[in-house]
Image (cartoon, rainbow, N blue to C red):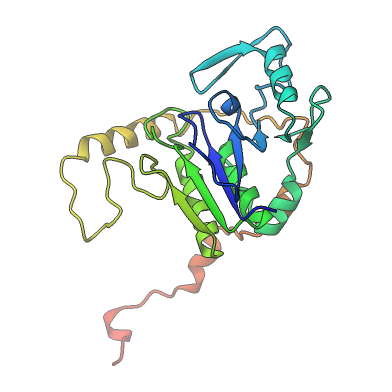
Length: 249
């Protein structure tokens, strides 16, 4: 096994990957990156449940038929990882979701990149490169995915994995309107954007969102989640109320 893994997105290829590195790409990253050793296609709409003549778009850059997408993935001759193995892709693999979640003790994946980062840590790579991912934090796709990517960055670093991130990425950084050094850096002029984001979120917090498990969803997936969550109502009785008169020094 190689010591390094380079995770590339859809914003541009990583030039001259070192011999010590595997190269993992997402969706149609094979169109812009050479030397790919592993592909990840976790989007359920990408090929698992689409008709062959449907059109698939990736990264806002490439649009091809689902049939062509499957054929091109198969022709790569490298493992293609998805939520389920695809019968038309010879080297298609099912993502080891049970192994990953049992190992880390949490079910927290809001993007394909998060799955890739977790898999890279799980497989034991010593050095993870993240190339040109999360470069547009204002994107409708990426905005809600950033906290999860930051979490897996923390998982990697806490386990002693070296992480190199392209300078245009916002993974491990604050949003452009905020600072990474709260209390030590004063930010002025960001009130309007923060209030606007808050207003939009508040407006939709009561919406009726629909979450439908796919056929690939393991029925007992959440049994591996070891994060304990409790009701604040159960905690409150532990704290006694007091007055100034009851305090002794």
